Image (cartoon, rainbow, N blue to C red):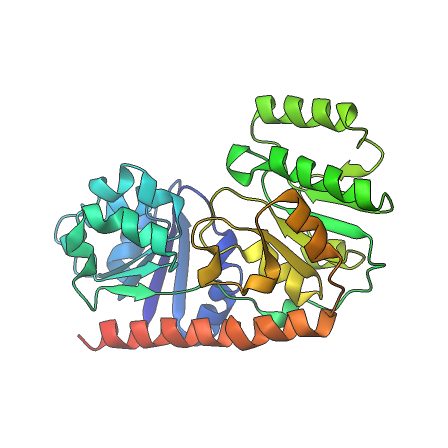
Length: 306
């Protein structure tokens, strides 16, 4: 079977395990939208996988005389853009959807997407072979991700301030880049105002997230909105206790014991103790990479036999 992965606007980060797996089983070509040979590879392939429901999916769906089977993976934010209206959905054979119920609700404006079996739920997954249990000291809290308004960083500062009022031995370590100067200015200003400067470290984007997480004990997700947060599960795979703000759809993925509503609730979750092996086992039981590739393989087989 010949596969072409066409990478849309937000890059290939969510394919870092899927691509090596696919390359061992199939003939694979990978292209970004900047590559000149992408159209030839689409024609060459039996199946084209458009990563992100954006420019790549729109381009492929409008190609004339297209005989290649088309898969589009939608993560979350694309559902709130005009890209979903720019795609000729009758040319798409399968839509792989990270199954957040609020994303699905947003897509109800295009009811033709939900004429089964065209929509396949594909949760994010963790390849546990890339992550090892760390040896945190019980005091370091990790945040992993972009630093922007949707990630609700100002709320995280309030939670952390509440924690230090209870016990000032904790530190907060942020791996990611500021994407908004307004948010950066606010965060640095409030860190100073609240006396958090010596307790917060902005460490930038990390190349080896497993290595970076090894001395941390908690992984926090303060977001206003998420699809299915991979960073939380990567932290859990390293034995970090998850602290997840109750974003819409959160309870579809995580149990109540890991979800908090208020800064005081955040503090109480931290006081609950640490069970590193339990967090890793939860990921293994619920979102293993092998289960994700099993779903993908079945989709490939179905399309190739049509």
